[in-house]
Image 1 (cartoon, helix red, strand yellow):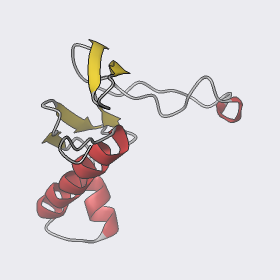
Image 2 (cartoon, helix red, strand yellow):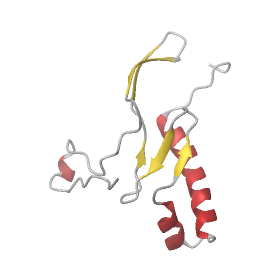
Image 3 (cartoon, rainbow, N blue to C red):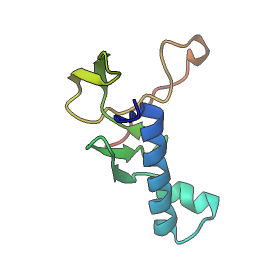
Image 4 (cartoon, rainbow, N blue to C red):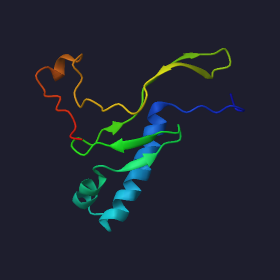
Length: 109
């Protein structure tokens, strides 16, 4: 689909992450790893999908909306459901056996 390029969630998350890293470097006035990590917490960025994504202050996961879609014949997507806004990510999945017993601490608001 050369005439209708597609992106996916990992591509968008990487795009957001690179821009948030840039913002954190500017905020920290340094590329020192510890300073940038501290400055990364709470960063926000207007995503290509039109929503504002937030970097969790505690675990650095992105808060992003969830979209459920169906693939159309031309390879594009028809969104059939989406959340009203970004969803706070759980750092550990309750559905992965290796994560059993790890705490899902809700992000502080």
